[in-house]
Amino acid sequence: KTCKDKVAEWEERKKTRAEELLALADTIKVLNDDDALELFKQTLPNSGSSFVQLQRGTTAVAAHALQILRRAPRVDRRGARPELDFIALALQGKKMNFDKVIEMIDALVVTMATEQKDDDEKKAYCEAKFDESDDEKKASERTLSSVTAAIEEAEEGMATVKSEIDALEKGIKELDKDVAEATQQRKEEHEEFTQLMASDTAAKKLLEFAKNRLNKFYNPALYKPPPKRELTEAERITVNQGGEVPETAAGGIAGTGITVLAQKDAPPPPPETFGAYTKKSGKSTGVIAMIDLLVKDLNKDMTEAKTEEEHAQAAYEELMQDSAAKRKQDSQTLAERQSAKATLETELADHAEAKASTEGELKETLKYISSLHAECDWLLQYFGARKDARANEVQQLKEAKAVLSGADYSL
Image (cartoon, rainbow, N blue to C red; front, side, top):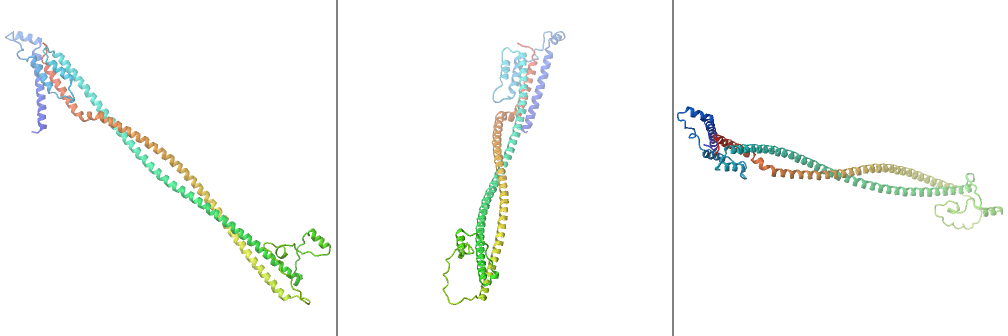
């Protein structure tokens, strides 16, 4: 037979024996009742007989009850139960009071019922607290995971924003540098244009002056006298004395009054010749035509230079407008990125604080769970065994009480 079968047989045997003892105890109690004994004296042939011979002595009853109690498994194997020791001591005494022992058994049964109730409540408490703390632990772990992910995301965003800020600042600096270089270049080009226009204008005036001078001699009809100018005091004295003054103010190129080009020394006077000088009108015509051609070339150069200057200035102004617009846009974007950076820094600080707080909460929860294990593990591990042992112990106490109840007297 297996151990399980033997245990079942043993339980059935204990149950049958207990029922048998209970039946005997009830029978003895009935037969030893005072009214029953009086009736038996009147009805039985031997009036001196009694059922004393049929019942066991108190010593035997006490020994039997003690034997039952000693078979009872102890609920707490870490130490003895004092109540059982007191009952055993009472059963072994010379003066036994079964009623007192039965009261002790009843009190112990009540105590054990209270203990079982306390164990049930403690078990429910431990299971509830384990569930509650486990939920808190999982919630803290989820929060910690979420906060950690948020920190990683914010850090990535911070790195991206910093890169964008660096690129924008670098772009603005390069744009300012390009604008400064373009402005300097435009300034230099304009100065070159101004110088060119001044030089060409002076050259043109000089050629026109030379042509007009030739016309004065060769073609008086085409000669254009210079506008009258206000004479100086010295020149007025000269004119009053019958002298002549130049039509133009002294100075400039060859005394023409035209400046810009560097003035050179006047050529020496022509050598003296003999005889009357005749005009060479034919040759003068070629010279005047050449002067006209030079003036035409100068006009063309000045027109082209002016057109190029206008185009360059327009391109420069467009560049400045585009650069200003781009710088404004980049500056606005830079401000937005810096604001985003400040927001991310605040978020990072908040996330770091939340992470530290959550880690603290998780640490406290784990500490509490550890204390719960220290408080509850033993009870939860042996709850079933303690409950079964306590039930068996109560059953044995009830059996012992039944045995003692059969001896309804004291010595």
